[in-house]
Image (tube, rainbow, N blue to C red; front, side, top):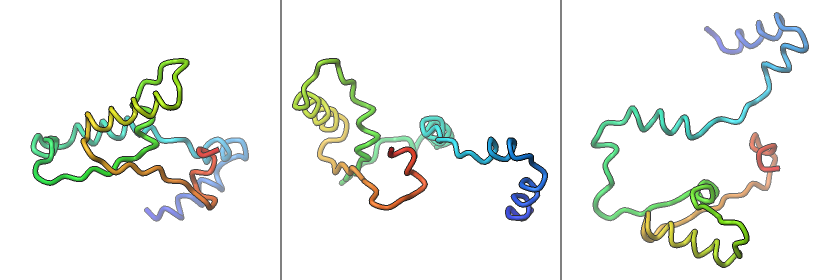
Length: 110
């Protein structure tokens, strides 16, 4: 079925209240998606890579991996963060991306 045709039919058939609630973009649950992908991979695909490996990590996602105790200084957080990355990945490139333009992630960024 043509997605545009389906979208047009939904708009015509919906009341304004239904339309608003059904077209609100919901934030995806990335962990659920990641678990679903990992569960479908073969054993070989789940194995640790070998040879010369270079890790490029999402800095924003990594922030959620490190437990930050209360009343911790910025320096201590940086040290915990760095030791976690070194322990788990060795030398890695960490990317903290930002957005200068309005995008579909604007609400999340705010």
